[in-house]
Image: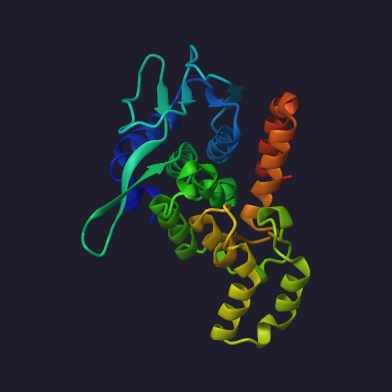
Length: 288
């Protein structure tokens, strides 16, 4: 099953499949016009992986305000919309933007709405272009990055993030593990945690039953409950649902924390950081 087969993608699946077909048959190199921000870095990397797998020539263009080019292009916007615009022809232009979707149905049958990030859309489009490609598979865990970085994770529950996480886990593309099972945790990903206490829990983790493990994590995180940050949604993910995949020592939240801190601290070097980060992701599947 592909990402586009998930109900959360039902409102965008048709246009993304059409885009994949047209991009595979484009007569000239494709320009990826992405915003020069954190979301743009991951959106561009996921598209580039698929285009490289499919042998489709492309060029990367990260700008503060991405605009269409004279040739075939994918333009990634930032303003949330209720539906994706139609694909333009002559020249071919695919417009992507964060889109409101019905992520899943609650037990009462009520639709839980959320925002599908441009990163997730680019992951789905890339998967449609080159589903079996090695680079596409290498980078697919980063489909989660857009929703993780968005304001949706500051609310009680982000159904889109949950749907994506559960899909990637069920397909064997990621592992979802509790905090003590992460070999290399970035302390800044959860300020206030006692690393010595975490190390002690990790040392005896294999001897604990499920109840003992739950109690250990709860005790470790108890001191953070009164903090204003992270939000409840992030708190649960950081304590119990860390994202790992093959070859990773650092989980996704740890990697993203370091990346975002550098991005914030060095605004004049963002163009170089963006380029270096994308290149490193394409080589290794991880952040530098």
